[in-house]
Amino acid sequence: MSMRITQGTFSFLPDLSDEQITHQLKYCIDNDWAVNVEYTDDPHPRNTYWEMWGLPMFDLKDPAGILYEVNQCRKAFGNHYIRVSAFDASSGVESLRLSFIVNRPAEEPGFRLDRTDTAGRNVRYSLHTYSADKPSGERYS
Amino acid sequence: MPGANDDDETLIDLQQELRSSHVQEVLERLDHELVGLVPVKTRIRETAALLLVDRLRKKLEIASETPTLHMSFTGNPGTGKTTVAQRMAEILHRLEYSRTGHLVSVTRDDLVGQYIGHTAPKTKEVIKKAMGGVLFIDEAYYLYRPENERDYGQESIEILLQVMENNREDLVVILAGYKDRMDVFFRSNPGIRSRVAHHIDFPDYTPDELFAIARLMLDELNYRFSAEAEDAFREYIRIRMTLPHFANARSIRNALDRARLRQANRLFAAAGALTKADLITIEAQEILASRVFIEGQRDLEGNAGAAGRASGAPD
Ligand SMILES: Nc1ncnc2c1ncn2[C@@H]1O[C@H](COP(=O)(O)OP(=O)(O)OP(=O)(O)O)[C@@H](O)[C@H]1O
Image: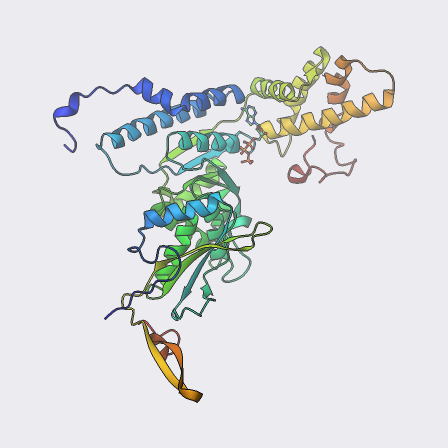
């Protein structure tokens, strides 16, 4: 049973095709946003800092250059989650504008909910990533 | 035959197609902007025609492959390769073979790193910047140094090869340089050679063409030669062509820059009232003051290197 992870924009839609990704990248470039390619094998929602694939790209004229990096990253980490994030550096904004998944592992084991009883019959919940039981690098092999 | 069917007789208006692509304007600009270069202009026209027809074939679904567009421009320095590459990028853009029509011009230093692991990211960075447009690699043969088998240039060549093959819709590569060295480069890199479809050779300019180029350049800057200056400049061209580091149109541009400098100095020294004619006229003395005319003594001034790339050139 696979549990499809829904993080970032478009994640409730079917996976984007490369052509659709290209259109999104074009939108980022047209807005002068700096675009990052990032990957991880720990998709816990609180894991905000994914590994960076290369440096942010902010001076490209065409989305093909970014898609090129996405494909290079897919080649190296085909069974990881890969996302594209676009950062708006304009004054007063300085924050993420868009982030979407462009690659996911074939099998997504998903999460388990852990309940812990604490004082006064209170319950604390935590989210446990099944894949994170294995050491980093072996999680989706 | 693929695509041969009932609508074989569909009429196609090639002229209309040409007009709607607005390629004609670029070709005309090329004609105006550049003196001489007839064989080059003809080849560019032919290439544009081929690409236009290819585009039509694609529209009618006779062909589907993107044609190989990578090119090699060979010729001596200053024969207009960069300028023509710029126009070529525009033509490709108008024919919809290039999405952006921009040109990124690089040499070995921009592609090849200094230490292990430095080259691939550098080359990829350049490629990404050029994507959507045209990558112009000047003196491309410096990428290949057979005398040093550990040279990082090879790594760069391999990445370029991959991209030239796999990203044909994203990037057009133009390799430029001296003809003989380029031939050697292609012979030792058959992979590159087989991916370059168009070879265009740039001839040297004749003295008359160089003079016409000078006139054109002055015109653009709103200057003109006096009658005596014209004669002096023709003489200048004759001598300059025999001296080392002669770089065709670039030498002309450098010579004119210096003449303008001298003219400004003369006007300044005269310190009198000036007419508009004074401001736009280059006199013979500005030309004759050139070191070219004191050939043999040119080292005495000891200011070689002032002209950067043309260092040592007696302009
Ligand atoms: N036929 C021409 N008519 C007018 N100007 C020209 C012509 N050819 C070259 N020029 C001018 O000469 C200068 C040098 O040309 P360009 O940089 O295109 O030469 P190049 O062949 O690319 O040289 P290199 O490969 O050494 O860089 C430019 O300023 C260009 O505008």
